[in-house]
Image (cartoon, rainbow, N blue to C red; front, side):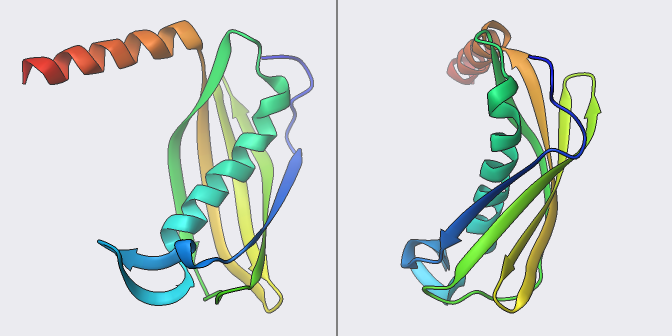
Amino acid sequence: MKRGLSVGRQEKIEITVTEDMFASFEGVVVHPVYSTVAMTYHMEWVSRKIILPFLEDHEEGMGASVQLKHLAAAPLGCTVILTAILIELRDNRVITKVTAENHLGIIGIGEVTQVILPKEKIAMRLKEASSKKEIM
């Protein structure tokens, strides 16, 4: 990784809740509000923005863990701001604390762990996983 990545670094994204973000299963909307699945995706995305400027050409980040609590609903058209703060750098692991909030307050909190690996190592692991799938 390039120098400069440090604890306290922050990134934000702002999204507007759309119908494709609704809580649904097998194409059936269960609740017409921002889903936990969509929140997970956005927490990973804002956390990825933390590392992007610091990746070397031969490196890539991979999600290793997402823990979140979905605390309140956000309906269609609602603006949600997600903020990631780098709280820990350990070896090749980058850990962020993430909050999601709307006009009423915090609607979600979480923690995202990413692992920084050489692209070659990732490609090798994917190839191994594909060959094991063919055997089964």
